[in-house]
Length: 127
Image 1 (cartoon, rainbow, N blue to C red):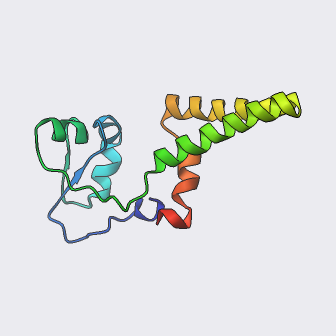
Image 2 (cartoon, one colour; image 1 turned 60 degrees about the vertical axis):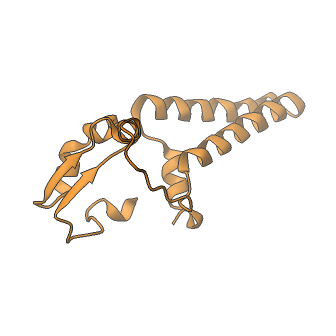
């Protein structure tokens, strides 16, 4: 989240462990994450949560936490369906909705930046 970019929530932790699902994004951000560690030992979970689960280690999931990517998929799918139906029934100009959503998904896939996910993360139900 935005508020954690320049300061980590627990300044008293002796070490920090950073992780993502597969470990790839965390490894890519290693320099930035180490700087956020503010002098503490920092570790990257090699292979991410998938490797942790594959090793049979316990996972505690916060089921109350919203899944941003599911929200992105739901909204993107809905917009594409709406664009196709409106383009077919109302005006071909509505196909531009599909083009924009497709371009956004392609950008997210190629760069790792998902504008819709960033926007959704700021919504009150995701805090």
